[in-house]
Length: 164
Image (cartoon, rainbow, N blue to C red; front, side, top):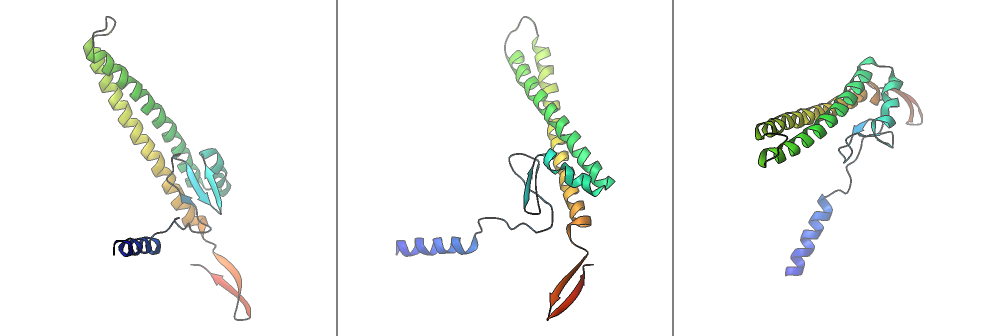
């Protein structure tokens, strides 16, 4: 009975789970990976902003280019602020919790506050950078992702399809 139950559970899991998320063809897809700059487009995986920069610049669309630039600026500033905040937070905690002849405890607590503010600001900018990239992929798909017109064969003849 126990084996039958395990077999039913296994079959249930096999029937209703999918190994991979299907990605739409001819559309840009932002992927949430360990590296925050990953895009999948036309069966190509673009990892890093240098690799997909040409996709945005090829359109010559000023909105897409501006979103890409905003993404880059926010990503770099966010990383720098987060790193600086983490270092300041750590050093401030060390100075505030023990006696050091060079820095007073009040200075240590000031470093903790500044580090916390910098870390939160850096996290916010990093989140904005991801948001800019998501908006850019959405805008790219809206404007360039789907073909507007196509010619195909149906019912033994040529047909013209207009995608509205």
